[in-house]
Image (cartoon, rainbow, N blue to C red; front, side, top):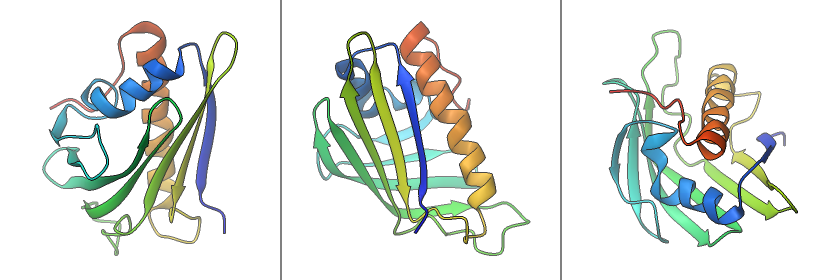
Length: 147
């Protein structure tokens, strides 16, 4: 199966990448953040306005190596989508590897496949926010969704 996947090189250490994914989500993904995302079994919710949200449980948190989140609840309330809950039950995996002067970060969204209705909208969203993560790590200022 073809799950959404993206790999990018970031001019930052894996320690900084891991920190951004566990403690600084509001600075690159969405300012509308509730909960905690630092340790296994932590639960957090990100929102994009009043009609789009995702609630995730940290399933794995291996410092400077791997993080995975299981989507426990989600709604993408966009009128054109018939199924607005396609993220529920999917898993988001971040794997990082230190290179000499940069880190390689791979995002795999298991369950986000071309056959599901929101694939195009959601993959475009991922492109936007992983670029925000890269910019945040390299310059200190990301482009998160603002309240």
